[in-house]
Figure 1: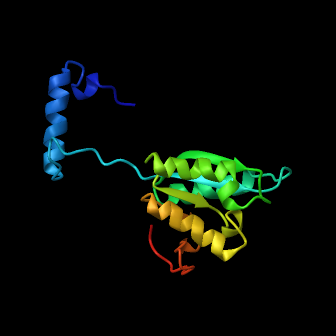
Figure 2: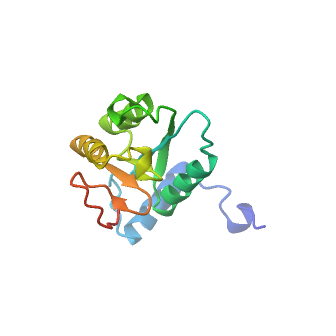
Figure 3: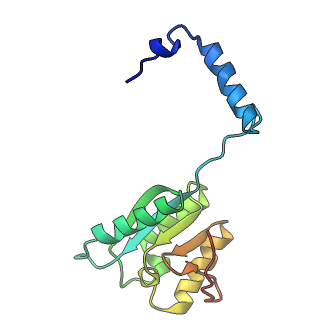
Length: 154
């Protein structure tokens, strides 16, 4: 392993490191005062009955998010499967992340975790879109309020 001393970096000041960082940024076309690009954030939503083991679905969502370079802000597990989506505490909490701009999307592994009733799923997607986010169901593309499940890059 090569140490800093072997590369002559031992005596560099913070100002020198900042100057070198600015030179490298300029070489790549990044303005010194350019705002930092924030990683897109999502909230994972999982729903099932009280006996459901979410470990596999949770890991699938985390892997999916990582594949797109998304940061997972939170994982919300809901045990109110028999309650309509609008009455679920966990789903309301997940949507709140979008409302507060802490996440740009709600990610779920299956549309049935939102609802098996297409109109309820559409209503939930519309609600999230009105807040500036979207509902992402793994493997189907964005869920459109019209029920149109076109494949789209997120």
